Image (tube, rainbow, N blue to C red; front, side):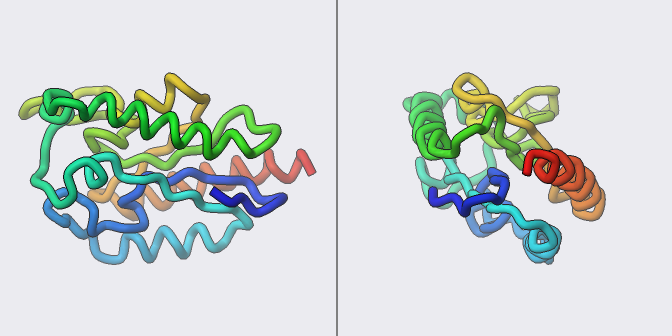
Length: 169
């Protein structure tokens, strides 16, 4: 992770920029392009996190959070990945918390709700849980089912973050 000086960093769940790593390659047309267009309006540094599911298994079918938890070694793998992420961002001096854009309903990268069995419950994904054990995060969620709403939520979040950042200069 090479951070550009004087630019705030935003951590991104992997499939926001690389949808081909999503389970069963579920692609949401133009979502990534709209995200990049929004992010390009701000002097920020984007740091794309690795996808724990893809790193662990490669191409795969959709699974729920509880199904991932039952796979031997996967939860430990998420913890080790969270350690690597923490070490990477630790180099950024003066940071108390890192903004992380998460994925709605993701078994690893959600910050709001997850699939457990055939139902959706309030909760966080496995990687987000492991990251929160290691570092303070400011979470904002992106929903591939509601792209326009998600873009507006991110814009509001970035405006708020940008005002805070400019006050520190």
